[in-house]
Length: 140
Image (cartoon, rainbow, N blue to C red; front, side, top):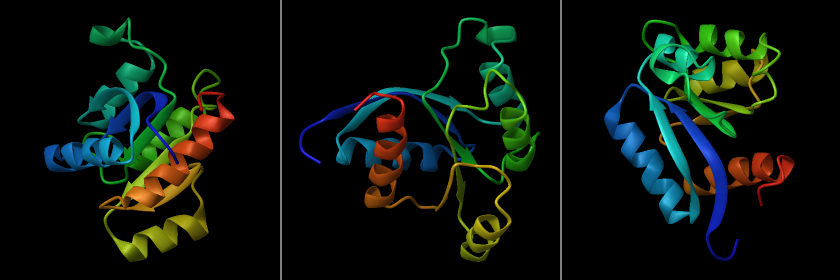
């Protein structure tokens, strides 16, 4: 990859502020730029995606990075809601987990996400995934 690339609207569903900062730092290091939106729990995430309440003007994200262990509504519940909604199901969802065995389990069970990644994110993994979905959407 050469030079900065714009990857669009990035929706990070993460309740840990340290992981939010780390993810944004990895994007910067990888020269992948976009507009970041963060939700701290499953209810907030679904309000944003469905443009409800404080989020009536929320943009449609180009990619969703979803922490599997998420408060109020779990990552699994949020993923099911996204993938069962005709207006949302085409948005790529990357599930993030900090547990290696859980990553293996998720990959074998495949609950419907577009990709599964171990936290903390490795820059090469993030670049590969974001480029794949950005190319699919005509952004890169």
